[in-house]
Amino acid sequence: MTEEGELLYDAHQMRALKYMERLHTEWTKRVESDYPVQAEEEKKETSSSFWGFLSSTSKVIQKATLSPPPKGVYLHGGVGCGKTFCMDLFFDSLPGDDKQRVHFHAFMLRIHQQMHEAKELEGLEGAAMFTRAVHKTLERGRVVCLDEFQVTDVADAMILKRLFTMLFDRGAVLVATSNRPPQDLYLHGLQRDRFLPFIDLLEEKCDVVSMWDSTTDYRLIAGRDSKGKKVYFVGKDSKRELDAAFVQMTEGFSIRSTSLSTQGRLVHVPRASLTRGIARFSFEDLCTKALGAADYLIISQTFHTVFVEGIPRMDRNQANWVRRLIVLIDTLYEANVKLIVQAAAEPTDLFVTSKDDVLEESFAFDRTASRLEEMRSESYVQKQWLRGVTNKSTPDSKRVESKLRLEPSLSENIVS
Image (tube, rainbow, N blue to C red):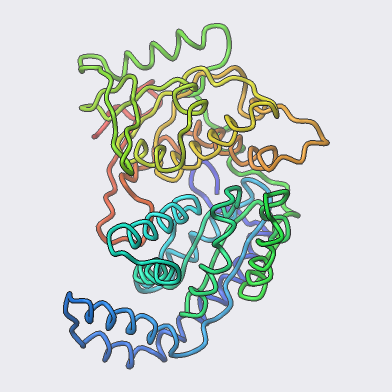
C-alpha cells in the first residue's frame, strides 16, 4: 500500500493471500454447515453458578468439535513485506465475530493474567488453570490471528505446546505473522529442547508460507515518501526541537508527573498532560528499568501521544535495553500511538551489531527500525488511536481520534 492508500500488485503478497483465501473458504463453509447446531446451542440459557460455567465451557468445546477445523496459516518473512497487511485483509473479510486479532505480546500477557486469576481468585491449579485460560481465549474467537509471533521469554516458551494443543483440540485455528520461520523460533533460548515439540505442532496445524523472497519494505517507503513533518529528531539541535514540539502541543495545559496502575504496581510518568492525553519520558525511564509489556500496554491505553527523548546508539552490551525498546515500539505501534522521538541516530543505526551476532534482538530490531520509519509517515500520523484495544474483534473496543498538531502539513487538532 502506498502513502496515498493505493494498493500495488505484489506477487509475494498474492501468493500469501491464496493461502488466506483457502482458509477463508474452508472456515466459512465449516461455520455454515455447523450453524444449525450452534444456533440451537445458543438458545440454551446457563446460570452464573459453577454449573453454569461448566455448561458454557461444554458449549464452547461442543461448538469447536462439530467438524474438523481447517489448517491455519503461518506467514513469515522480512520486515515491511506485507505479512500483517495480508493477515488484516483476511481478518476484516472473515464474516462473523468468532475471531480475534491481537499482537503476540498482548496475547501471552493475557494468558498469564488469566492463569494468575484462576489460581489466586478461583483456587485452580495445574491443568485447571490452563483449561480456564483456554476457555477464556475461545470465548474471544476461535480464529486466533496473532501478529509478530516471536518467542523470547522462557515463561512463554515453556507453556506454548500445552496451550496450543488444548486450543487446537477445541477447534481453534491459528493465523500468525512472524519474522522467523518456525524452526528458528526461540533460537538459542534457554531449555529450547523443551520448546521444539511446539514447532512440530505448529507445522502440523498450519500451512507455513515464506515471504522472504520479497525485498520491498513498504514501511520504509512510507516513511521516506512523507514530507513536511517532524516527529523524529536527530542531530545537535534535536533536544531543543523536541522541547519546542512538546511545549507547542501542551501549551496552556497543566503538566505534572503521575502514575499508572497495572497488575498491582505503579508505572511512573515523569511529565504528562492528562487533559491533552500526552506523556513525556526519557529512554532511561522506559528501557533501562525493569519494565515490561504490561507497563507499556497501560501507557498506550492512557496516552495518544508519547514523547521519548535520549534514545542512544546501542550494541550487544545493552541487549536488555534493546529488548525493552522492541516491546515498547511494538505496543505503541499496535495502538496507533503517535510517537515523537529524540535519538542519537536514524532508526536503522540505533542498534549496532556484527555479522557474527546470534542475538534474537539483532534480528528482531529490523522490525523495530522499520516500524519507527513508518511511525514517521503521514499515513501513520493520521491513524486513529486505538484506546485500550488489544483485540480488534472485541465489540466494546473504543476507537478514539488522535491527530498531531505540529506543522501545517499535519492535522490541525488533537481530539482526546
